[in-house]
Length: 87
Image (cartoon, rainbow, N blue to C red; front, side, top):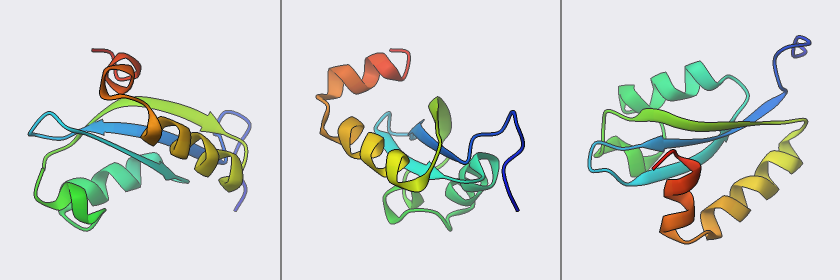
């Protein structure tokens, strides 16, 4: 199934966990991925830090681009990640 004209193929996202830490990931279906995090079936990091709230998202045309952007964000200092996440 291909993405529609308004829907990016991949999304790079940041969620804020209940302990105020930030988690960065990529997804094809962002709503489903956030639901997985909140159900405890997402990343191990977020399982003990639920619920999570989406605070930032960026479209990416393909998985490779999304993974590269995710890696850049993960290397940012905490202050820069918080700025991306809106404070």
